[in-house]
Length: 359
Ligand SMILES: *Cc1c(COP(=O)(O)O)cnc(C)c1O
Image (tube, rainbow, N blue to C red; front, side, top):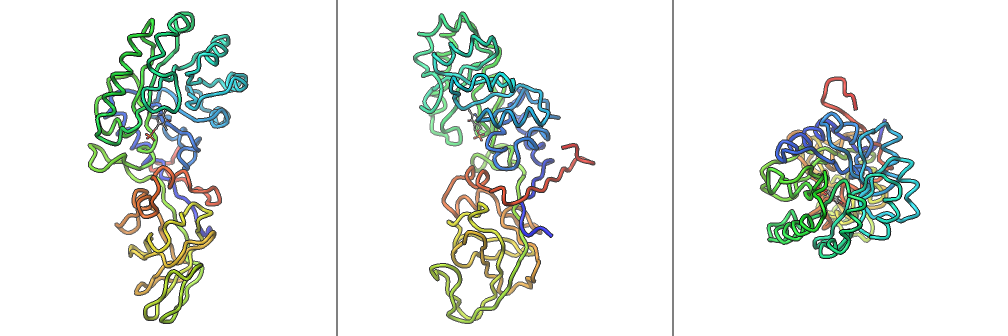
């Protein structure tokens, strides 16, 4: 019997993708980088393939290669800048780089293969600075990019920065010798905020995996990932006894303590010590004391929790739900880190609501 695992609802993933594509009105380029935000990159891509996405987005050549070996034949864009020494590996796996450095572009265009021009309009992370695109017009005349794109740094906020970035991006489009076949800007939160898309594809990530970019958006994703485990020990501690390292939790009266075999080495963050909660039979139970590397204790006083019972640390149980957002807030990190932090020590269990489940 599995002691702890991550459950992945591929049907929910697909419905999230369909909802986002309907809102955007253009095809998706689902971001399946970082092993599909922790839920499984290849499994995510296979599940989303029936939505007819234009292609997929990854961060590294290795991630793209894994998709190719898994049978993905659509275009795959590598969004993190590549080194010139990686060009051969990209060619071999038939991957499309997102380029911003003129020297790397010069090297790549000799392959005669498609590439995308990454433009920095304010994120200052990757891509050619928007005001430099005009200087390289001759290069783009010789070797036109298949696509041009930028990335919003604060699409989840309503702070006006997106409009600034869009104006810069419009300058880029005007500076190019011709409008590329693909023009794209929007991550998931950008599509949640504005619809339909004025460009040719959208690049959602976190929304697909069940996390809204902000509260109160026009569409809400269904949860995709759940973290479940079984109670491996139970004890009653007397008044005044403490639980876990550093003795930060002290029993007031006799308390029943359940030990769950999940800790920070599984991605259940130490920041949840004395702050997180889980569901046991639909009842919320608080973390008691420090989360340890391999185990976490919960105060299950007043419940009928028994050895081997299911504990939901993330996800839905009997009508209540622990969301990624809740774990993120309680541990004071971003929802992206919660999802991508679920370690592979937790086996993944996939289920697919589509009868038979192709993925
Ligand atoms: C990760 C990423 C996305 C997806 O962002 P989300 O906030 O997860 O929707 C889109 N575009 C680029 C370039 C990215 O790196």
